Image (cartoon, rainbow, N blue to C red; front, side, top):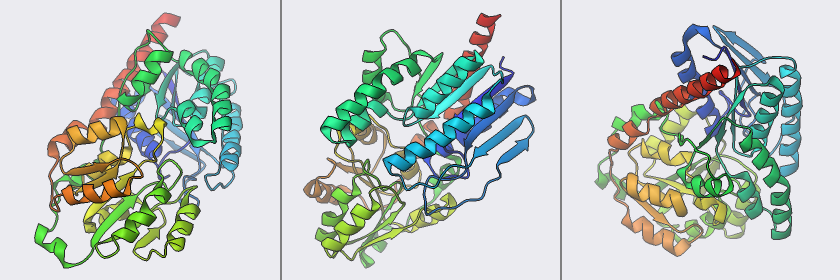
Length: 402
């Protein structure tokens, strides 16, 4: 059994991000499974996910068999250059903090490959096992997000790094089963785990909350809420301005979040003279839960890019637990998953305004209990199984070394 586990996560509570909540839930599950005999060290950053959200967290936090080290990184606004510099600071400090230390296992959760590669480097230096938690396919995504020439060039640079990183791991978890065709083709013969985001305990408790009767929905314009990142990946600037304008007499949008495409979205709203869209800064989850409870419909959207046909948004699990109608622009695996597993969800092709309006008509404006879904995808249950998988991988490596 492992004696010391290092967990690397660029985001960790109290930061606001799916990666942060995921890492926090996993640590709790590991501590419950391992008990007092194993020491866990976490290296992360001071809260930085959103420039407009500030949370206080101590630099070094100690509790029983748990140490959290939070690295101060430069402020950034989600641009490529400042994110690269922020990660470079995180990586350099992580290498300093881990120099000369011995771990039984390094666990690294990563959406942009870099934290995964950092974990591979630390594990090589410490001569220990590596467990990777892959939350996105960075090589695919960067190829789509950048202009074609630069996208191909970036992919050619990062593809060998991805191969080295994946091949360094004892075990690789893919957060979306939709990732499997990509990884199975590139890494034939390797088996993968599939532990998804799941429904956080805070939202599990809301699954029993009832909405207002459907007759209440007719009294005013429908309140549509979106919560999450406002970046190129979400593509809100490509759907919300025209959609809000065409539905001006029927709906009001409340967008909660921030990101690299927010300025583009605001300009598009101003150019179209849209006045039924409100944007609020990111907020803590207990506040967000109250906003969800006041909403009529929850909205989500991913940009019309090939890479996003493989993903499974964490927001789907969160939304499903609220019992609210869900309206979303999704393609590929996420679309199939939502249609099959979530009741009262109306989907349209990303960036398709006509399709979005048609889908809206399909929604039932009523409470839709999804207790079976919430029970099956409880994050606590998923993380318990994942913790057991991590321990098993660590134990195999330990026996092999001895």
